Amino acid sequence: MLKLALIFLVVGLVLGALGFGGIGGAFVGIAKILFFIAILLFVVFLVLALVAGRAVT
Image 1 (cartoon, rainbow, N blue to C red):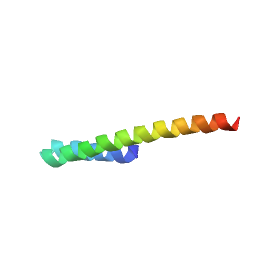
Image 2 (cartoon, rainbow, N blue to C red; image 1 turned 135 degrees about the vertical axis):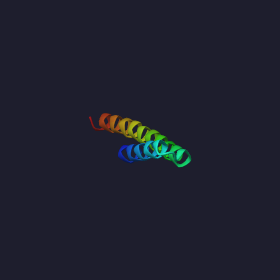
Image 3 (spheres, rainbow, N blue to C red; image 1 turned 90 degrees about the vertical axis):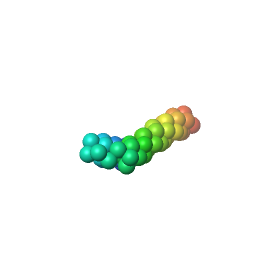
Image 4 (cartoon, rainbow, N blue to C red; image 1 turned 30 degrees about the vertical axis):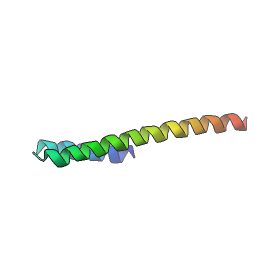
């Protein structure tokens, strides 16, 4: 998911540099949303792994 966020960020920056500010801003906004979803999923899976690891031992 971080890879997809990075792709959206690069496309948005390129579009912004070429003068397509509206659509470029939309792409950067989507990249931000994807980044925060990826961070949230990372934290959730980290907590689940820690809880499951303690349950096994």
